[in-house]
Every structure is written in C-alpha cells, then in structure tokens.
Length: 402
Image (cartoon, rainbow, N blue to C red):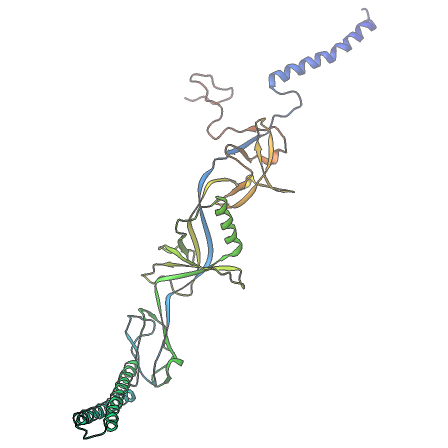
C-alpha cells in the first residue's frame, strides 16, 4: 500500500476550516440568527393613551356638631328642678331647668305696685294742671304756678314710663327662671344639680348639640394646596364648578358611612402650628350614626385630570438623575425616557411630563435590557401562534384521542 504524499496531506488540512465554515453558515441560515448571537429579549409594553382620570383626596378629620350651644341661666337663684333626661333629644324652646321663681314673683308684684302709684300721681298732676289752665286766662293764678303744675304732670308721666319698664323687666326675669333650650338637639349631662345656687350666666348648666346635619372638620396640608393650585393653573386638574367637593367618610372600624355630603367651607388662613388649612364639610345624620368628636377618614371627590397619562408602577425605575421609563423606539430598541411623576392612581403613576400619546412603555422584562438594547415586543395574551389547520398530523409523541 502506497503512503500519501506530503502535498495531499497539506491540501486536506486546508479544506477542513472551509468545510466547518460552510456547516456553520448553513446552520445560521436555518436558525435565523448568526451563530453565537442571542435573539432580542421579549418585553411587554403598554401604549400610552391619555384619558380623563377622576381624582380623590383623603385626609383625617373629626366630627363636630352643626351647632353647639351652652345653656346658662340669665338670672341668679336656686336651681329648683331639672326638666329633661340627660342625653335626650330636646326641641327648641323646651324647658330644661327651673330657677326658683318666688323672689321674681315678689319683684314683679312690687313693680306693678310702683306702677299703680306712678299712674295715680300722673292723674293727680294732670288734673291740677288742667284746673290751673282754666283760671289762667282770668289771671286767678300766676303763669309760674301754671308752669310748675304742667312740669309736675310731665314728670309724673315720665315716672309712669319708668314704672312700666320696671314691670317689663320683672316679667322678663320671671320668664328667665324657666331655662329653655335655644336650639333643637341632643343634651349633655347636667353640670349642676337641684338646690345649687346659680349665679346667672357665669354658671354653665349643660350644652345642647345639633347633630343633623353634622360637620366634619379636617386640615389640608399647605404643600398639597399649593400643588392643587399649580395643577389647576397648568390645566392638569379640573375642580368642581362650584368647588364644592363631594365628601364621603370612613369610620374607625373601616366601614363606610352611608351618606355623602358637600364641602362647604375652606379657611383662607394657614394654621401656623400644623401647617394646614382648615376645611369643613356637612353630612346628613338623621339616624344619629355620627357623634361629635369621632375621628374619620375624609375622601373628597369630584375633581378630574383631563388627558392624564398613567403607567403601571413597575414600569417606573429610579436612576441617578431621577425616575425614568424604557420606551420602545422606532428602531425596536429600548430608549430610557426621564419622566416627572405626580400622584398615585390605583396601582399606577400619573405622569406629569416625559411621555406622549402613542409611546410604547416597557412594563415587563426591564431587568433583561439596557439603554439601546434591541427588544422584541411580546404578543398580547391570546395572540400567540396560529392554531394548526384541521386534519394536520399530530406531533410525534402526542397521545392520540379515541
């Protein structure tokens, strides 16, 4: 057997790399990707679509009576009787306490007696002046005597008016012995018992609170008030036409109060101690479910954000220069886009600036990419590979039916 020549061996070694390159080229043509290069990562995107977004604000508030009045006696005396049950609902004008009326009845009788005396003096002085007037023309009396009589009649008439005023005052004091409720509402406990000496308005007897409707008072932080004003001026926020927000409250146990109210007052001043602006809402409370002094969560609704842009929270990333998102550009590459975020809207961020309608924001797969990386947008759910045509043979190894 003859040995191969050196020339033929060298030729064989030269043909080996060419054959390997041909095989690799064939494989790359079959697989669709150059050898050693991974396919672009698959990402899920959302397309930016501006929409009108309802806005809600939430604060901690406390309930207060619609009207709260202190019940005090207008006269001094001994507290004789209490006419109401503590904690009961009373009507306007209903008697709550009785101050001993006996001294005031005596005072009224004395004032009436003084009035009768003054009226008698007035009648006497009037008769005297009339008698002197009839003889003045024949000069039976001097002009001075007549003038003195006329002045006495005028003084007597003034004394009658003073006596009438004292009678009216005595009657008023007698009426004030009946301490009445100035409003309709719920009474608190009595702070003075029967037999106590009451020194007029200085002594608080009880209080009455009107709880239907009922107020809810809360504070709006100054920073949030400024942000709302800026958003309104920039056109990013629309408030209710009358600025009377709809108000709902959540109770301490997490339950929602069944009635809604309206915002009816916002203070112009900022509380220097808390840095908040006081606001107040009134809610119907016919059943008395809400009691003054309760702490509640207050929700304001009625404002909207026109043309608002939102993206899921997981799409917003934090970088050295602030927050940004990845957007798929026209070249199917991941482009980092700085954004300014606003408030939360459910599980999404409201984007104040940085995105426009039609932008494709990457929400899933951001950990597999970097700036400028080529990406492939995943097909939405239900849009995968088309179903096999009817009658197509089953894949090898697949179980046969029937």
